[in-house]
Amino acid sequence: MTGRPVPVPGALTGPFWAAALRGELVIPQCRACGVRFFVPEPACPSCLSQAWDYEPSSGRGTVYSVTVVHRAPGPGFDTPFALAIVDLDDGATLLTHVIGCDPAEVEIGMRVRVEFSKLTADIVLPCFIRDIRDGESS
Amino acid sequence: MDLAMEAVEGAAKDAGLRLADVDGAQLDWPGPGGVPGEGSSWARMFGRDLRWASDSFMDNSGVRGLLKAASAVTAGYADTVIVGGCRMVTRGPDNSPVGAGVPLEFCDVWGAYVVAQFALVAARHMHEYGTTPRQLAEVAAVIRNNGSTNPEAMMYGRGPYTADDVLASRMVATPFHLLDCCIVGEGGAAFVVTTEERARDLPHPPIAVLGGAMEYHQAAYANPPLYREVGQIGRAAAIRAYAMAGIEPGDVDVFSIYDPNSFEIIRQLEALGLCAEGEGGPLAESGAIAVDGAHPVNPDGGCLSYSWNGTQQMTLKVVEAVRQLRGSAVHQVADAEVAAVASAGSGAQHYELAVLGRSR
Image 1 (spheres, rainbow over the protein chains, first blue to last red):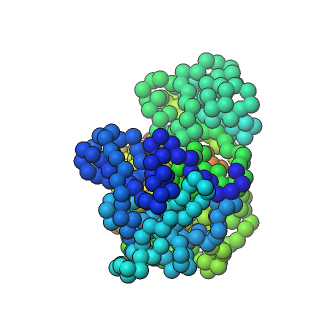
Image 2 (image 1 turned 90 degrees about the horizontal axis):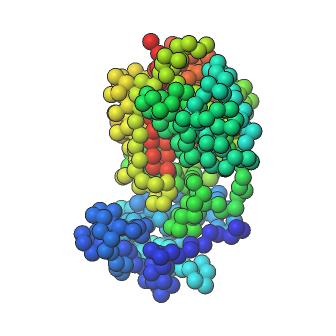
Image 3 (image 1 turned 90 degrees about the vertical axis):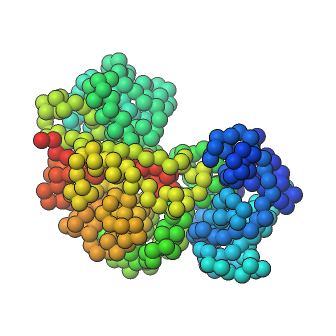
């Protein structure tokens, strides 16, 4: 490998990446207990039901933690970048990048919303940007 | 492979045993020869049929390896087991997957390698409790300076370092500077586990497993490390291990614990019950973790300076604890009678703890 790792959609995750390509963020939601979870897994981690569907997310959330990565693990990354954990308002937590601002400005508690970023012809990544509409509410 | 051979032969020799005396192998087999990854490949090297073998790299190292070998010996499945193996650098900086080398669909694409994973835990702890970069740097300086003066350490002769030196080194992933992070190397490590009865007939005074416990939150790196879930991982294991050993946290004379970065020591001071959650930074800054402090941590220099040789860094933690309890460590903690050894990872989201002591 010489570039940034590219996700390879599998049976469980194909619909997630297909939705991202359309500009939609979808999250697994359990049909039995209603819990939303991420990453996609064979069964709901709360009740073990295998009946779950991808449901749309508002894509709005809050930064739970962030690190500004200055030394990338390999080629294909523009450094520095803000690697963040985002708690979505409507459930589930994602690893992502916060883009569109100086990485050093990304803070825990910052309000963010999803912003799709094209990686390849087939893969679009759900990144996040500062949510101006909400302002900061940390 | 030659690194593993050297470690295995060295451990047996140190114990006063021939390989033919060993009937259990919890050992890496990298090849060539045998079947790579299959522990029973060691039978030919030992010149005998084995009664106990292990294939998984995590079961062949550190505290998890120790507790499983001790279980086998106690149950009578085997009499004498060697635990260990080696690591060679086989990959360059090529965006290889983090951890066990399995591609992780929602991790690798974000560049969430080990340092960054731990940084996400540290950043949240600093946000919640006011832990400072200087407190992290103090930890790094103390442990690195243990290695600076240990002729066996990879970084022997480098330093000494002050907290200011750590803070002045280049940033890797906030809050970690270069000198906050562990080194990477090649090497082997191994130790021998046997029955108390047999150990008493061997040259060294036996070191006993007084207690142990394991704790697994979830698989490594598939999900991001959330401080609210893994921030105190190890606390439950510590409570169980101390109870089994019949000790309190303050009874531990020396800690040989995972230091992939400076912050992970601060976190463990809390999880191991030496202070309350959030107070690890001030405790570390107080000098408590120095060789002559109240809670000495990694007198050999740890992963920050001695060596990080893959999963076998966990085995080196056991080796250092045994040396401390024998009284033969390079930086000896005075009158060390009880040691705590940990294999861990907040990024990896697991914790294994053993309490070792001089066999009475």
